[in-house]
Length: 467
Image (cartoon, rainbow, N blue to C red):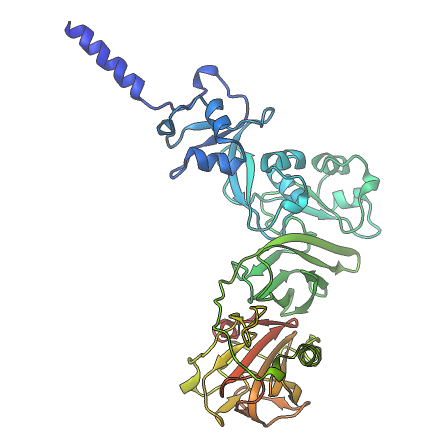
């Protein structure tokens, strides 16, 4: 009787043990597997791999979610014909579907299948990319880049990288040597190459900041490349102006509009790395919501809200900031434009949604408002050149200073302007006095920073160094 009780107890313990692998009894699973990580749930795994939770449970013989244990091998349905361990990596800037395919040794069609892509445009920087590996992948694996120059043959290209044209073609699945065009990059095995894979080999790095791109911030692009290169490009249809900043470093700054819909936008970089190597790169990037609040409705002079008046004034305002002069005049953070006693007093901050005279919230606060009574001093935050100084209906007495590289600072509602168009100013120089002219509810300084013709958050320029 005691033996029977002991046997029953052992069988009960065995039944309660979780399955370490749902397909262990069937030999090798039919498809790639995912290794369960801490914090995983069956629902989260199904979401990650784009499969129905019922299908995932059925494929793995799971009838109770408590069967899911850390280290368990889960077969992902719908990926028959593929094998290996499924892991995710973050898509870096400077990569394309082709370059990622070469780095991970996975065909573009299999990468698209793993990630449910219907178009390469669905790949964007910062996305989680599902790949097949041996489970030991950690970051982006190195790959050699060989870029065809104008007038160069595939044989010459291959020999310059200590390989053969046939090996280069086989590695890149090229059907013909005649299909390559100047500027096109081919890939070969390497142990130390770490540059952005979608760029020619002469580009050693691409940095995009800030880490999280948010409405109303300044987009900063930095390329490490050969001296003497020339770059241009666009973001969301706005031109990018690159300027050489030290030997082999190229920087472009562009504002991201505070009311730009959060989502995916196209970033392109073009130009010539050398006279014989053209460059063309495109990648989708994500812009996030800035979480700007809604100000209480404001009651102002109706003359200042007239649509035609605003159109005429805006045309002159943005025309003054349309250029991008190559002389970078500032160094370090921008100084406060008002005395220290007012430098942290803000009746309204940048980006707040605005309603005038009980109208809809169709606009946003384009600058940062500083407290101050009429006559408080206004100072230049950095060296520059005055490009606008006029009395206007909406902005009152207003001044704009060009700091170079497409960066401008602007000052509205002044009681008095002390500078004129063409004047060069120094950091800390007195340029005017706080007032209550234009569209106001009381005296204050309205201060704007415009980058690439777009208003951005001035507070960040007071606390961050660009570039």
